Structure formats: C-alpha cells, structure tokens
Image 1 (cartoon, helix red, strand yellow):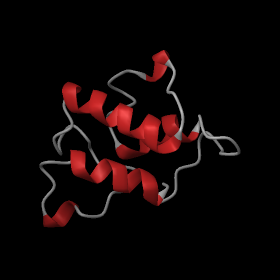
Image 2: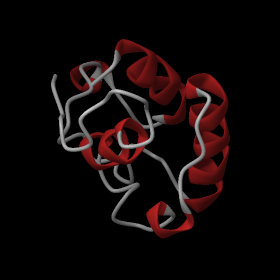
Image 3: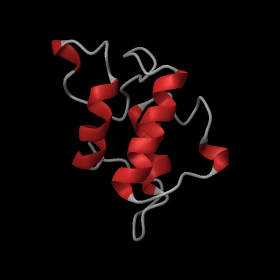
Image 4: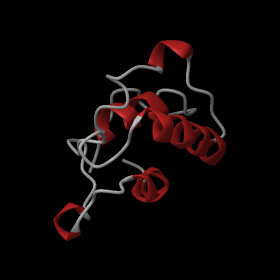
Length: 88
C-alpha cells in the first residue's frame, strides 16, 4: 500500500489504539471506526489525494471492509498501477 494511502486513512481510524498503529491490508476498517458517513468523507479524501474517481460499483461494504480492499480499488484507478497489487 502506498504511504500516502495510509496517511490519508489513519485519521479515520478513530478506534485505533497503540496496537493498531501499523495499517496492513487486513486492517478491519469498520472495527476501527469507519462508519458509512466516514466512508464518504474518506472517499472524498482519497479521490482528491490521488486525483482519481472511484467507480460506482466500488461504492460498497466490501470495498470499505479492509485497508487492502480499499487500496485495491484506489490502485485500480491509478495510471500504471497493477489493480490487484497489495503490498505492506
């Protein structure tokens, strides 16, 4: 995952404690406080931060379930990125 992605994501993880500081592809976004309203705000931050627009079909619970699933959706919109690549 791109460091810019984790930097944009971190402020939305309101329930992240000291043990949750490392954001991994398996990080459960719902468990850490990303509700539907925050997901919309996060979406705007990601689109502005990366200069992309996520397609409507990516606006679902599965996309916003984990940091990895959200990163895959973002990476798929980046020029030159491999859509399935998720690195820590």
